[in-house]
Length: 131
Image (cartoon, rainbow, N blue to C red; front, side):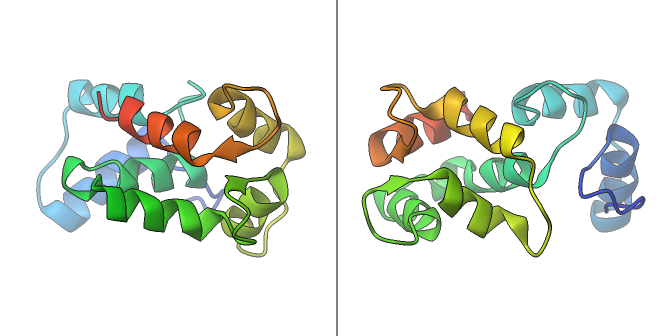
């Protein structure tokens, strides 16, 4: 779907991909609604972390077991929280991720301000994104 290979999905790429994979066109209104729910930073692009969160946020996946498994995917050291280094390890896929972007991810989710994402903060983020 990422036609231009920039690691992000723009609205036109979503529309083209949806037509290709699902056989129907999305209206501009449908795409705008999707972006309003998925594009957390409001930059009119869906980056990998936003895509992962959106993929995990389907209501049928939000059982405690699924949330715990998703959290463990990021909590590489099993320490009970997700650090910037762990986010970088999971989301980088051989690419360099901007530390400012990673700081923003933490800042948006880290309610107690300790610089890491706890399981409870992770669950709140996941549940908030489906409302």
